[in-house]
Picture 1 (cartoon, rainbow, N blue to C red):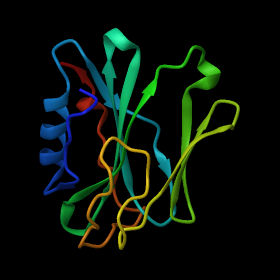
Picture 2 (tube, rainbow, N blue to C red):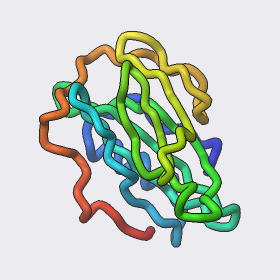
Picture 3 (cartoon, helix red, strand yellow):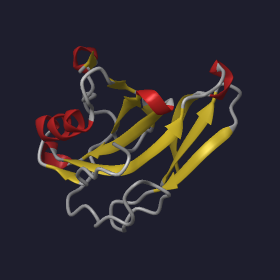
Picture 4 (cartoon, rainbow, N blue to C red):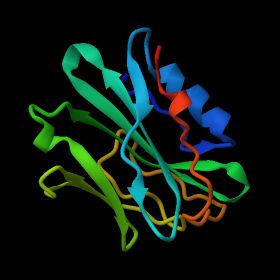
Amino acid sequence: MTQVKIGPEFDSWKDYVDQAFALAFPGYGYGPGPSVKSTARQFVVSMIEIPKVSKDRWLVSEQMDGGQLHLVDDFVRAMPADEDSAIMTIDFIEDALIYSDARARVVRRTAINPSTPVKSSAVHGKRRAAAIRPVAASAVPLWNSAMSRTI
């Protein structure tokens, strides 16, 4: 589960969901993470529960023109011991995703830019750059609460 690679390019939302669901075994939870606060670009965040080890795999993809998605962050994080330690907000500031907990402490920072490979401590090493442009943040969000489910 933690070593299986997906993407990093997805032709459509369906392609993204199909690959993400392929990671989850029966009984694993799959759902949205916090929305990324951004005025310039649009992202979708998914979390997949890894039960017996009390961890979650986080997938963050950027929506591109034409409906494609580009995986920009993919990491595994231990489930927090308390609610204050959980990732509560994700901000996109100066070409970086900033993950903060309930006390506004930064718990992760991932630099991204669609014209260069991703620089992150993610499961995959460097990824190839997206050859298509990002969608403005004002576009309709991709995530639909109906997509949350337990497999």
